[in-house]
Image (cartoon, rainbow, N blue to C red):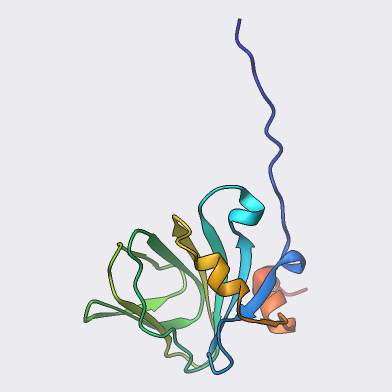
Length: 150
């Protein structure tokens, strides 16, 4: 006899996302979509929002793989000294120990879906930062309203 179980998914909307700046002078914000506290698994998924000219500090992870999917905007990704241009629709996969920087080189905000597996304390670092709000522009991009004539 086959026993089936029903898994109830966790569903969130942009209105539910909590956003943070990791430090006061950061030029990017991270809006947590899922993290170990919400998803009960070792992953962090967030939307990273870069102001014009904004970038991450150089960083690396010992165990985690980090993936960036560019939702909107243009920029530059640097990993272990190699530089590539990135734009909406591009994906970037950074292996463990790869020192990397993502920078907004465009004339509008850069939005990236960022996923890290395993979490490697990424969510805890984000949540230890400064809470911030998502503004109307952010909500329009996250709700996919910016591309429609509504």
